[in-house]
Image (cartoon, rainbow, N blue to C red; front, side, top):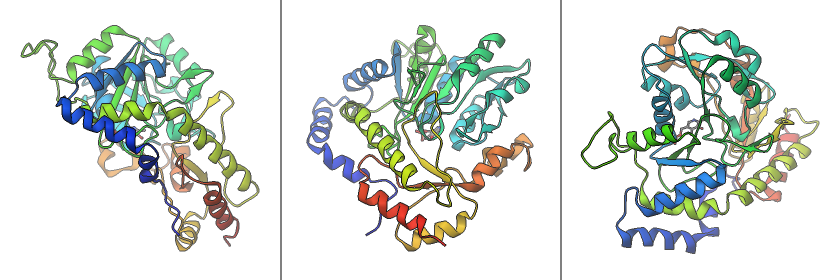
Length: 365
Ligand SMILES: *Cc1c(COP(=O)(O)O)cnc(C)c1O
């Protein structure tokens, strides 16, 4: 029996009647784009994240793009982020015409190292964009303090961190804006594409609401150069059903991670660290291992699916070679990219499955 990396079918079947009802309701209402189901999900998600506004969009990438535009980012500006992230973080900065500027990660958390942040700030810096990678928050307090001192906007890339906490505060509520993805495999996943911007700033919220729908508040009165970045009604209805289960699913992910950590203690892989400052939601359970190729072959032989998030740091990707970086520029990100290995992680994973995975790793020679 194969142990899957994620199992979206198991989750659908656990809530099928409610999901099917919600989808059929939208079909009957014919509110296929935005509409009341999206509005009601936005309200529920804002409350969940402890923010005043949540604006639904058609992907996490669109959320990042619009948050940057709302912050006034454009050509000539610089946005600071990390190279150890999914490429979308950096691509969204590029969409605005601004230049992505990287700071390396803290290898304990795989997130932005605040100690390296001030050296990256120039007179052109507008925004700092930390990434809550794998569902664990970046160390936000020092980042927010540096941002405040320098008059910079903070946008959290919370695409992997729905419900994660930092010193009791929710991901997406700490910076000026938070950006979420509802790609199917994310911790809160749509049955298609989706995203959200969270913010307590009413001006940012208003601008993003306009930008996602052609820059207009009233039909055909286009005030801003906008986009078609609207969230679909069916996705809003599905996400609203799934939001009720999110905490329970996050708890299951955390329990799985603790069991993995326990059963892999003393093995040849280094288990992920949980930072003292918060509660992660384990979007990805990534171990570090030097002989990664060999372990991957062993897992494949044992029918255990696995992944790498991510095999190349963004500064070394051909798509971003225009930034002029070379190997050695961000050593912690490069080391992480060479060593991380993601094991099966999803709420419906069973203890039995975790034991099979960990036994296989412990038997690897
Ligand atoms: C998934 C993801 C995104 C992009 O979200 P999409 O919905 O796929 O556009 C951005 N940043 C991070 C860290 C992600 O994991």
